[in-house]
Image (cartoon, rainbow, N blue to C red):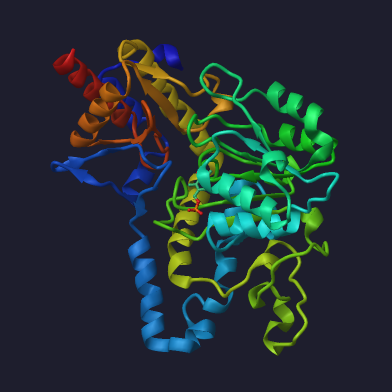
Length: 427
Ligand SMILES: *Cc1c(COP(=O)(O)O)cnc(C)c1O
């Protein structure tokens, strides 16, 4: 496809007109800039609002107003079962069985809840393997769990250093660290897509490797869910967690998610329990003994936040109609175009850090601005002022993530033209 890319408005418009998913853009509210749609590339941080969210929220507010407590049973979408309404589509997006996923809490909370069950350190095997430079929550959570169990992060937290030139991590590096430390590692926790570099990992290969060394394997899918197709069940991973406000477009602070592999569905793992995780059939007998619902539902603590689940439900319904396979195809095309524009038009200003192999990345390109932090920041501010929305990572990286549900080739071209205009004005 790359040989046919062109850096002209006519070509970009024709490519957008031929896009079978083009109508989905109209289902989103695109933030305006100077009377036009901005070129919004920040779906890796906060996805855009689906138009249908407002009516979905209004419906729940109306049911609350009209029915109050009765809406648990008599609402248009009875609240009693609300978390189940997102289950099937969520399972589709992450490649899991419906019973393996649950929408609940937020990412950080779910990470801790999963670790209560899946991080069971012993003196012989106390350690956790993670990546160096992980998102802060992940490091804080892991370190605090290690301390909570009475171990010392100085020895029990093994951080895997990036070994490739642009700050990415090879499979060989993961193999080496497990060959050296595997027998004392209780848990391997790695990302699906790395938030800074945009590198995608092979969940299945990592899981097989970790299991071969006797480790539990979990994934943080914050930047992977809704970004690329995932086959969580087939990967064999023990657990995974994610948030839903990035590529899943479920709104600021949206309800996150968790995956527990089916082989743990009925395991008597230690867990922190609450009434919503109790066996649904007997939950309202309000007995003193906790009997967990089989599957991921059994990790719920509280009755779900209806007003926060309503946008997730809307969003997942869009994903269901679009389909992850078609979204991925368009995503590779859009990100490929963006990369081509950088290589062919902007190479004197920008350098792509994200792996060039589409199998090793999602939508995001992490782009270094040549010439240092000041210059990078000046370009980033210029882009923001001209309606091109990416995000900034110190010291000199701009992350640009074309989301296939609402971004177009024309947006990628707008990015390139804005960088060119800045270069022409600033030398
Ligand atoms: C976005 C992100 C988080 C955010 O955690 P919250 O609990 O949702 O605030 C955590 N980890 C990673 C890797 C992320 O990308």
